[in-house]
Length: 366
Ligand SMILES: Nc1nc2c(c(CN[C@H]3C=C[C@H](O)[C@@H]3O)cn2[C@@H]2O[C@H](COP(=O)(O)O)[C@@H](O)[C@H]2O)c(=O)[nH]1
Image 1 (cartoon, protein in one colour):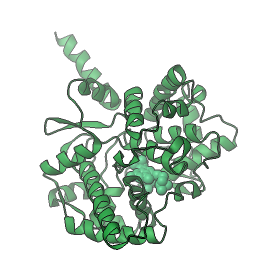
Image 2 (image 1 turned 180 degrees about the horizontal axis):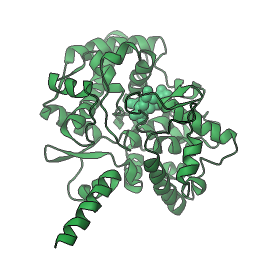
Image 3 (image 1 turned 90 degrees about the vertical axis):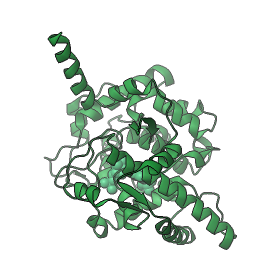
Image 4 (image 1 turned 135 degrees about the vertical axis):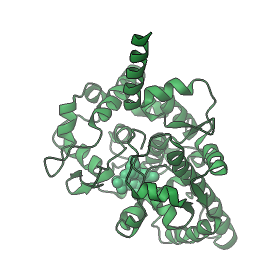
C-alpha cells in the first residue's frame, strides 16, 4: 500500500514537471470549449480580472490608426529580418520548429538575461536557429531534432555572455523529440503535409496539431469546465497565414476563428490600455514576482480575459470601419494581426510598460 502511494506521488511530481502528461490524462473525459468560447466563459466567472468596454473602445481607435498607417499589415511578418520568406522552401518546417519552442524565455530576476546576437526573448530563439542554419546544422529537419541531445541544443541556443543558459532546456528537448518523432512517423518529416491534410481550414489544422502533438495541448480546468487557450498551436496557424500572406500554404478560409495568442506579454498591453484590470490582490501577486502555477485560476483568468478582450476589440474595430471608414478594407482585420500589433507594441514600449509586471508561469505552453 505505502509503496503504491510513493510510486503514484513520484509519477505525479514527474508529470507536473513534464506537464503534457497531466493534461492528456485529464482531458479525455470532458468536452473542451474552443479558445473563443473559453474566453467568454472565463470572463463571465472571473474573480481576479475585470474587462472594461471603455478601454476596448479607446484601443480600437489606436488600432484603426494602425491600419491606416500600415503598422497593422499582413506584409509585416516576412519583413522581419529573422523570419522566413514565403519563397524559402524550409519556411513551413522553420515555423513549426520555432513555434514548438516558442515559450518561456524569461529568466527569474532578469527577464531578458538570455541574449543571442543581441536579441532577447522570442527573437533570441529565432537568431539562434538561424545561426545554427548558417553553421550548416540541419536544425529544421525532424530527423535531426527528434534525436537532439541536451548538449547539442544548449550549444545551439548558447547566449552572448557564454554563461546564461536558455530557459527550460530539458523541456525543449522533450518537445523536439515528441514532435519530431510524430512528424517523421506520420507526415514524412514535413509539416506542410499536416497543413495539406486540412483543406485550408485553420480550425482543422488546430485540431490536428493539438491531437497529434501533446506539447501543444494548452488546456485547463476552470470552474469545473475544460477550457482551451492553445497559444502555440494558434500562433503556428497565424505565422503560416502571415508568412504566406493568406495564400497557398497560408490560405485558411476560416482564419477568423483563430483568437489572439495568450502569452505573458500581451496582457501587459491590454492592462496598459485599461481594456482589462487586475484586482489589487492579483497585482500584488504579480509585483512579488512569485511563480503562479500553469492552470491556476489567476493564470487562466489573465489568459482567458486577454482572448475575450481581443475578440471584443475585433468586433468594435469592424463596426467602426463599417460605420466610419468604408474605404478601409476589413479583409485582414482579424485576431492574428490585432495580436501582432499588441505584441509588437509591447516590444516598442518595453520600458514604458514595465510598471505592469508580466505573470511568471513556468510552462511549455507559452
Ligand atoms: N501573443 C503573442 N505572443 C508572442 C508572439 C511572438 C512572436 N511572433 C512574431 C510573429 C509575428 C509577430 O509580429 C512577431 O514578430 C512571441 N510570443 C510570445 O511572447 C513571449 C515572449 O515575448 P518577448 O519576451 O517579448 O520575446 C513568449 O510567451 C512567446 O511565446 C506574438 O506575435 N504574439
